[in-house]
Image 1 (cartoon, rainbow, N blue to C red):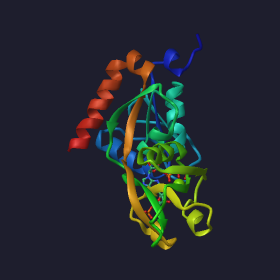
Image 2 (image 1 turned 45 degrees about the vertical axis):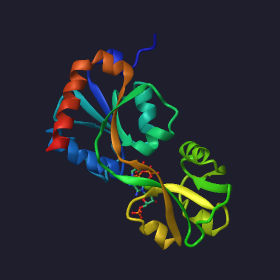
Image 3 (image 1 turned 60 degrees about the vertical axis):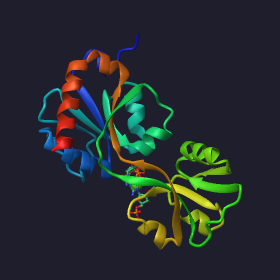
Image 4 (image 1 turned 135 degrees about the vertical axis):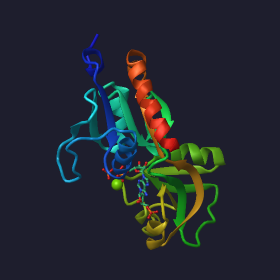
Length: 217
Ligand code: PRT
Ligand code: MG
């Protein structure tokens, strides 16, 4: 049996997606009486103590949160539903919708070009959810995986449509695109490693209870 953090220490580790999710998660944690110590957005530090001596925070990329939690390198994680639906990782429970960093996963195309036939080329950072979506619609989609700036693809003729996150819609508009369909609503969730949940049930349930009650305030 391999030793990992969960088996050698009773400290809990929470991996939080850096960037916009971190900023909002930090506010939510503070309302729950949990303060992340010595954090500054300019700092290069990636691990932080909190005012609870048994809770440590890691700041990692949104897409890496499920990987840390899946392998038990972090007991818990906070990241977007978009990431959770796209990941192949399964060794965690999705516990709580935190209602933060909300946006929508949408299909978009060039303004005035929404008449798509039964085949389409779709550029996206989310190939799995896009494939499932078009399959359900009975549309044959060729998925083109990009890592960012999907908004360029329709204009340059690389794709007919994109599947991407939309908040205000400004990014789409400024790139001559319009949203046509909702794929799903996105917010950030608390996830918990399955073994950690068993081993640290009481401590984790306390944590969940506290977070949940500040969501209701
Ligand atoms: O930047 P990096 O590559 O390190 O990682 P990242 O881009 O995954 O991180 P970050 O900080 O952008 O956070 C991503 C997570 O935040 C996503 O996984 C979502 O769960 C959540 N989130 C919430 C968003 C948005 N809202 C959002 N609007 N992520 C990205 N956007 C982008 C969107 O991709 C598009 O480019 O904002 C643009 C659209 O915004 P509007 O307001 O112009 O519509
Ligand atoms: Mg980003």
